[in-house]
Amino acid sequence: MKRITRGVVKLLLLVSVTSIVGWYGLKYYFRDINRISTQVRNKVIVQLQTQHSLFLSYDDIPTIYREAVIATEDRSFSINKGIDLRGTLRAVKVDISHEHPLQGGSTITQQLIHNTLLANTSKSFPQKFLESIYAIGLYDTMSKQETFAFYANVIYFGHGANGLYQAAEKYFGRTPSELNAGELTMLAGIPNAPSVYDPYHNLILARQRQRIVVQCMVDNGVINKSQAEQILSEPLELKGSISSSGKANLILV
Image (tube, rainbow, N blue to C red):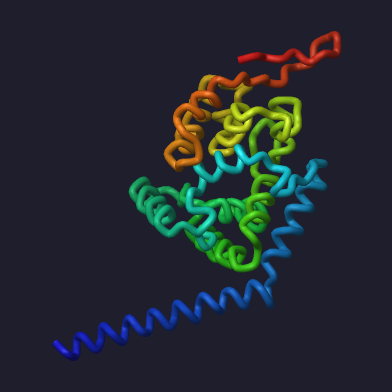
């Protein structure tokens, strides 16, 4: 019995030491050798230049949009270390049972990595593992505010819109700061499945997704039910097609 106990203690010590060395090793590697934060910043800049879009800083992004995205996509964003182990394991379990590459379970940090450093890689278990390692490295070298801002500037919204600035212009013909809470919560839900929740193609599904986003905000304690009802009652002023007179036709919902 004592021999077994000693063996368990040794194993736990080995795992602990290995984990600590591995963690600080990654931190040193991504901070001093392979500066991952610099790589991500450069990728974002290149993408914005290629797409002729404007960069939105963290303070430029409306608070309601930030709260909506975090409540829907990554509730532990403010405290997690780049990855959400529970969410990842849950996604792995679901994907193994369905026998297809890993889907879902990604934090905002992981999604930023996927849309920059790993943009040209296909979804697979090795890719997901690398995404997680990079996300941990980014957590150690980039602030949460900057991480969110970069994410919002490169995420794809469908309809040819990359980043929040282009999405606001594409769908509503205005800048993000000019949108109401209803419009911003609708935008927050689109990246989950851009082709499905594109309001031009299916406004009903886009509305349903918006309700899910708002409910997530309620569940996360960001807003109460009364505020949720107010957000959902706000008009959505979609940017219409250009008529022969040259004026935009607005669709009021």
